[in-house]
Length: 319
Ligand code: FO1
Image 1 (cartoon, rainbow, N blue to C red):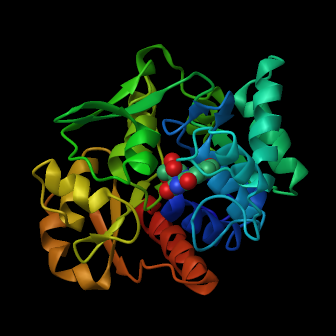
Image 2 (cartoon, rainbow, N blue to C red):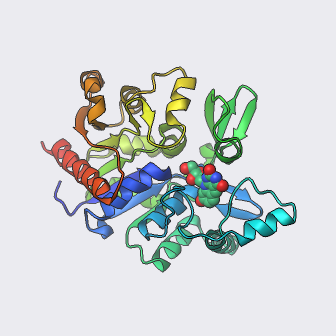
């Protein structure tokens, strides 16, 4: 795989955006296509909100709030203050600058634009060269099943702060959704060198993408390597509920369990040095393993992990 081949990165949440930033600093941005999960999307106060698209957009444009992992840095909250004063729903925080993104997106969609078109125009307006594709232009809603009944994803993640026990997941309307045609074209194009599954939550950030009708077959037919970066390091998720979900689903909350989740799909799995003792168990699943530093604390570590992933893809692609 020569360096100037297209890379497809499947991403959701903060971990995904961090690796995407590392990739954007490591390769020609025009050769990087990010496929963003839209199962977290929801309608709130009449606005169409696409959190995983926005986390990538803000991260690549340098506008992201590094502490929160969502929304904009240096945000003001006059809208929220006004909303509370008027007794509006205030469990989901919408910063004043962030609001512009949701209002614009909602308006463009209402005018008939597709989520792909809106996303392309928004990222271009922020000077982003990297392509950002919604996984689908059709609505898919991740539902978290709990002993007390189903929860819309943002109700689980934000309103309930990930406290409920998960017993399963559903992706509503996915059977009618089409994978983004640009993604399917890229997978069928031999200028695409590799697919990288970012260190995102396998259940609620990656599975909505992988379960889109026809996508798994197209991935299985993809000639290049498919690799994933473990979102679990030393039995813990760097951020978010992945490890808690694994335990609640009766799985070990370790890197090998994530590898098992992806086995049959991926050719290589990237784990952190602290999980080196799991290498043999993971290799037995029929995939190659790269052991490196996978905790991305700063730009240098994001770039280093991105470089490792590209080198791993080269190694996997070699005959
Ligand atoms: N996450 C929170 O924990 N609390 C919030 O108030 C919140 C607001 C918010 C607004 C816009 C946006 O794009 C994301 C927001 N998130 C918030 C994060 C969001 O729930 C997650 O980014 C994803 O859905 C999970 O990756």
